[in-house]
Amino acid sequence: MSTWFGHTELYLGAAVIVAAGTIAYYTRMKRLGLSTEEKRPFAVLYYIAASYAFFGFVVLNSAYRDVFLSLTFDRTSVWIGVLIEGVLLALAVLLITGQTRRYTAPLTVYALVTWASFYYGVALSIFFLEAVGVVFLVLLLLSVGILFGYVARETKRPTSFAIAAAVFAQIPYVLRFFHSLGEPMDLSMIYPAVLGAGMVIFSFLNTEQDLSLELIGYGASLASPVIAVSLIQWGGVWAEPVVAILVGISSLGAAMATGTAAYLYGRWRKNHSAATLMLIVALSAVASDQLIGTLASRGLVSQINTTYFSMASGMVFMTMFAMTALLAAGWRNTVLVPPILITPAAIYLYLAYPADPWSLTDILTVLGISFILVLVIPVVVFLRAWWLTRTEGGAPYRALSLTLGILLYTVVKAVNLDPVYSYPILTIGIGLFWSGLTGRLDRWLGKAAPGQGSG
Image (tube, rainbow, N blue to C red; front, side):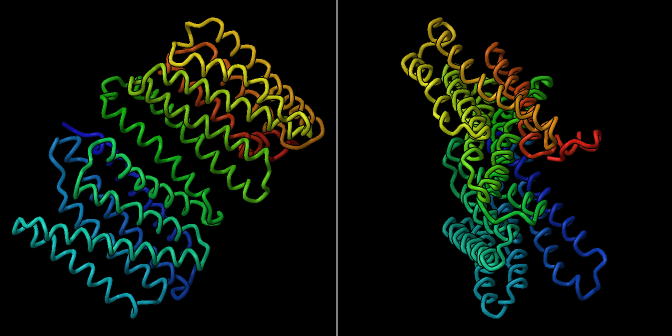
């Protein structure tokens, strides 16, 4: 029988292959129009792309054995594959740093001892030799990661930082093939690897971004939905094509919410705006709710717990957006009004747990009143902002998209739809937040309607 880990490996392998393709494409575009001498520094990136391509193939092979053949994992092939990847990355980082004389010898020793230990350990069935091989393989990866970290510190390039993080993140994945701790713990051993692959992809898609936690957020926007989808896939969702599509849409919403929060973090690092920080909290709450709700739609999380978590996330979301609206309007003295309005609902919800909240009329009344009072604030402020920017110039659709997103989110939560359908619909609202907060909606519509703000 296939495992959750194997299903997650399918996505890890695909993500690593995409990372390899992204690096290769970036390198090719950078080399266009350059002389032979100018092209030479970029050639080292092809070693990195090749290393990821090879690693991705090895991971997909392991996943294929697990998911489609229901065979036990072939740890030796995985270790040898990671060894070849490590050697290629070591070659690349030595060429980048120019420290071939200083570091070639120890890295070569790590690689040779690793290969010899695996070869003789498997041939002679000596477990101790395999353990030695794992130790030296980890030393090789640590050394490569540290060297890429040094490059990142010196150059402040997100690409080097992402590669360093991805190399470190592979170590738990390698160790899992030495000793499995069971499905729940195995998740913590493969999640960092998926996150690292996502960081590499996004770093090469935007090499001008700052070196910060923003990049980790972009990696999480890929990793978190992948883990959720792989768990649901393991549960047999593909037997129901319509449900599988809906689950995919829900996961896309979680990815967009996480990615938007990461984007806002990048803005917050520059302006240190309290309003931006509140939007980060709001979008993080939405992303968490979307992930938990997607799992609950397949019965993988308790429905009662999911309902309470969803309501609590909704309170955080609505309160943060209301406070953001008040700050944006310049009404700083009233910024504590939303949390005061939502407090009775939060207390009632806390006291009601673990009873089914939908069966308690009094609680629903308190929740309804509190939510409506808080809802009015951002809707009125953002509609006013939309009207002013529409008449005076600016980015009119940013405020409008936020208003529509908030209203859609509130309506879907209020009618208590089946999670299978509600979370795909919420993805539309998240798409409105994403397109509005990043300014994309104004740019798209600005092209079609000259004279409007570009955002």
